[in-house]
Length: 291
Ligand code: NAD
Image (cartoon, rainbow, N blue to C red; front, side, top):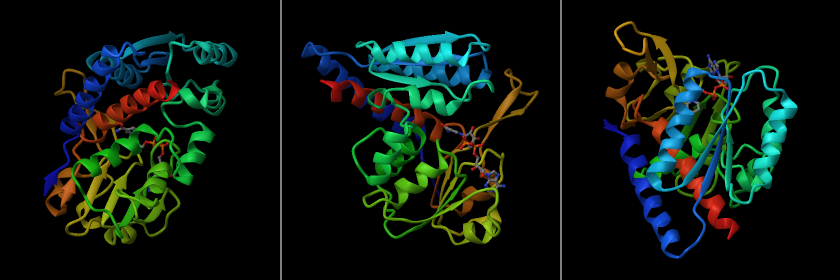
């Protein structure tokens, strides 16, 4: 069993970007600038946004954190996005999800200009991704693809079972793995909460991508020997032994599953850091595509 080390690959990806940014500076060109919008003060969202801003600093990007009150109106948030769309210095805009219940995720995502949509959630960018055109790929699935590429894992012809069909992880992941290319060329089964024979499907999978948000859902008896297991889940579970009061759990029972795998991502230190690295790549792309 080999660990797919998200920290390592993320570091390598960010180091590459750092060199490219230094090159932009040398050439007197514009430096990528990411605007992150955080509504309210959800603890996990604070952590994710903080990590994204910190990564910008490490690489040499500019970043702007726009903090807004939990009770901001939908219209006010849309006008903040419009201002960011119209600001020529801002290359990429991300709105940290989830948003408060009174605000429509869909309206907000659709308000971001597709050329600044570094999360790749805008319908125009999703459509391009489906067609295999050049675009922003949603950061988590993109990060997983980068990791498969880094470890030179040949996915051609493999059966991939993706658990979870959200627009931000499961569905785009299923599309990317089924697309022509490497990584890709998989036969993909996209599963969800209504799937009846999930265990049997998983047993036949060469690749399992678990993105359902239920800690340690994937057990050893669901995984065949030699499978590649990508654990996207991050759930905070109470743990009084930790200073923070919680531990992070993946969707895979690592102790049971890892001995059977050829490759597996740990939680933390797997998909999480790769999501940030992929977001940084999208932000760089947003900047250089403009020039
Ligand atoms: P979501 O809640 O939007 O979607 C969950 C999906 O899982 C749904 O499609 C649902 O049908 C499916 N599902 C639920 N129960 C199921 C079951 N018993 N069997 C099969 N499918 C089932 O979640 P999401 O936003 O896609 O996130 C999933 C997990 O990934 C969460 O733990 C989230 O925190 C984590 N996540 C991690 C990263 C990262 O960077 N590592 C990024 C995004 C999300």
